[in-house]
Structures are given as structure tokens and as C-alpha cells.
Image (cartoon, rainbow, N blue to C red):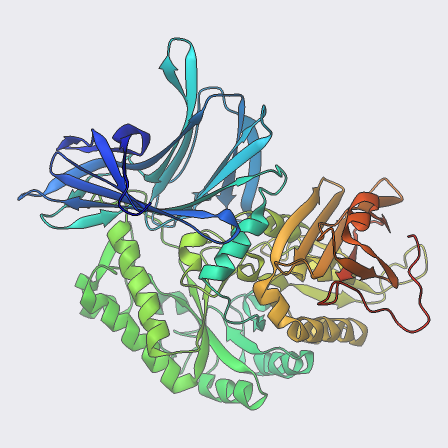
Length: 630
């Protein structure tokens, strides 16, 4: 708007108060910013509209007084006309990540992350749907601290009401002290309008994300954890290295227990070094050399924030740590504590040629004594992660917190991808990945294959006695057989990993997975930039679509579970005017969308459909093939 200035009431933009009173008055707009000075504070909000019409809001609060000021509420506010609304939120707990649900908005619906892990208990996403206009808006927090999000029906005078959305730092225990001349940034808010209530038009978020934070890699990984957990030995792992090489995997990662003594490896948390009497007998370097000699890259697991009271570092430098009950966790707000851990990581990279680090994060205090809602702590942790990447360009950094409890847009800025869940059942995992896709691009969501072959079982109805068995939980206590194609459907979309005994795969299943990995690697560039859609989401049928932004290369995955129907009709989202080839038939996108494609449904079965358009809008068919009505 150039130099044009406009005014808006502060209560329509923010809810900010504390020992200084409340920020109130008229905010002035100049360009893309809204500013106000009130009671010693200057508040400035900037909004930028990016790819796919997605808007990012950044709000900064600066102390202009000559004394410290303490804020007890720091929220961005969005107001809309009244109406009949539904609200969508996601619960996020261990093995049950990203469980989304809609509910009517009668008075107020609130969701919050109240601890140090930003996705523990709930995910930082909230959507509202106007049942009258059949339009919605979804809000994502780029979380940097404990947070809250709230949708409320507010009185607007007389019988009239309006809808108010509030997002920001968790005000339950907040006492954020801002020093003179200092500032605090509220969590960035990413929001946009959607028309599809099933998936919140998540493809728009994905397009925006790829524009701002391009994917660096789409790896195929082996991780030891769900193979034998912490009961490994050198010979067994060497067998996995050979099989991982045969499958064409690119990274080989040793999870927990590579450090410390075999009888109590957890006592060495915080020291992050191998012991000669550990599980590998001091041969970790030999193992790393074998991994690199196979053509794969080597990786290790580190629980960066955690430490044992028995560790050497806690004894030498207790000041580096905070205490939670009997546990210790590194104080990332301290420069010396961060530098210690950076030195430990540098040593591991140098000693073992580490190219991949799985950063776990299992500590979760519920109250920050500083009153800062863990904002300072998380900022220190983020500085640590970014310094690791700066010191070691090209290193792949995976985020994990008991599965997906630090899996959100905020941390996605710094981690290449996330360990989706400790429940890597393809059936449960498909649903977790589907719902996580509503708030993260597919490229950030890892899919892990935890499987083994079983032969000479009870023959099935057709006389087959070989099965592919998968875990149904995080412990291998519950197992079931499954069709390999369903596993392939689960792994579509993001980085694919194996965390199982690869020697327990039959040659038939190993060949199937070799082909799967080869196909994923061939299409890595596509998956790095893919946007996702949920076309169908029912207990019996899930249909996911992945495509490029221009909808020229479209992959549709149809997964069925105990379906009571012979077939289902899939209607992909295509560019109406482009011509697409599908199974030897060529039609305009509008035709495929209107008529759909009939897909046979089985019991725990999956199929992939592909629609491909040429660059000039016409599809190329094999010689002698004519396009016919499907």
C-alpha cells in the first residue's frame, strides 16, 4: 500500500497484557505492517501472502520502557463474522499421533501444547469450518515454545456474535520478562482458506512449504531400533549391513545403546561415547567403516537433551544441566553447555564418519520456572541444531521425540524429516501419515517398514503358506500378516526406512522391497516436491493423492481394509484442460474427474493409479494403443 496508512483496533489483532496493563488503542498500517505503541511496548505485525495464497504472520513485541516489563498473555487475534462453525484439532500422543477430529463450536474450543516438547498432547493446528458458506480457515503455529490455540464465539453487541481465533504462547504459566530494548517474537502463524473439509486443502500448505523450505534429500534408511531394540551385537548388525546394501539403502543408523556399558548403557547418556565393554565391544568404528565400504552412509542416535546422573559430564559439570526429578537435561540456554554437546557431536562425526543423526527428545517438564514457556530453551536447542548443520554441511538430521511428539512445522524448519511414530504398523501408520499430512508436507514424514517373512504356516484358502508379518505396536508383541502392496502404499510419499531383521525376509519379499526402494530412489526428485491430498477417508477405504504442483504427474494410492464392497470409484484431482494417460487410455482431466476410475477392493489391499500428462498437454501412448472410454 506504499505510504497509505490505515487504522485497526488493537483488540482485533492482539491480546497482549501483563504488569504494564494491556496493549490497546489504534494500530497504524503502513505497507505490510501494523504497529502500535502502548504502555511501554511497541507491537508490530507483518503479514506476507506467499505461494498458493498461504499467509504468514509474524508479530514482535519490543520493550520501549526503561525498566523490565512482564507479559502474561501474548496472543495473535483473528476475527471473522459470526455463523455456524465446526472446529478441527489434533490430539498427539505416543503411538497415536495426529488424531484429528471435528466438533461443533458452541462457546469455545481450545488446544494447547503445555510442555517443552511442542507436539506433546496436541499438534499446533486449528481449523474452523463455516457450515453456512462451506468455507474454512486453517491456522498452523510455527511453534517455538509452549503454545495455545483457541476458537471462540464472542459477543458482538446485543444478540450478535463473531468468531475469534487466538494463537500464541501458552498463557497458563506465562510470565515473560522483556528487558529494556529487548523483544519477544510470538510464534509465527501460517493460515489460509480451504474448501475441502476432508484434508483442509493441505496441498496448498505443501506448495507454500516447498517454496520457502525446499527438501534437501529423500533417503532410503536402515535403523536398528525396531529390529532388536537395545539387544544388538557386532555380528548381527554386520549381517544387517550386508542385507541393507542388497536392498539399495543409502543410510545405516545405529539407534540407542551404541554407547555406554552393555549392562547399563543408559547410565552413559550425556557422555555420548563408545565404551570398550559396550554392546559392540569397542568395534563401532569397524562397523562404521563396513557401512561406508558398502556405499552407504553411517548414522547414530543421540538424545541430545538427556543425561544420566551417573554420567561423567554431570559429575564434572552439573551446572550444564537442569534437573527434573531424578533426571537431568542439558540447559540449552547456556553457551558452555551447547558448546560441550557440539564438541561431542564433532568428535563422533570425526571418529566414525557420521553423516546422519537421529536426534531424540524424551524429556518433557510441564512448567518452565523462568516463566518464558520454554521459549529460551527451545531457541537454544534450535541454535544447537543449526550449528551442527553449519559445522557439518550435508549431514542428514532426523527429528524424533518418542515418535512424533516434536513433529510440527516449527521444528520442520530445522530437521530434514521426522520419525513418524514408534507404532510402525502399516495399517495404523497409514492413518497417522494421512492425518499428519494435513499439517506437514509428505517429504517430512518418514515411513518405516517393520516386517519379517514367515513360511510353513497354516496354508490359506488358496494353499499359500508364506506370509509377510508386521508389528502392530511399538514392541513386536502384536503381529499380523499383510499384503506387501499395502506396505508399499504406506511408504509412498516420504522417506522410506527399514527397522527390522533383514535376514528374516524371504528372497521373494526381499526382491519386492528391492524394487520398492529402487523405484523410490528413481523418483526421489518427484517426492521431494510432491504435494498431497486426501481424496477419501473412511474406515474401509483411504485414497491419497500425490502430485507435482502443476498436476502433470499424479500418483493415487488406494488402500482398503476389510472392505465390504467389490470396488470403489476414485476421482483424482487433475488439471481439467490437460490430457492424461492412465493405463493406456487418454482423456482430458475433466473427464477423469467426472467419471472417475473403478478400483477393485480387497481385504487389506492397496493399488496405485498413475495419471501422466506431457509438457504440451497431450499424453503419449504406446504404438497401436487408442484412447477408449474407461
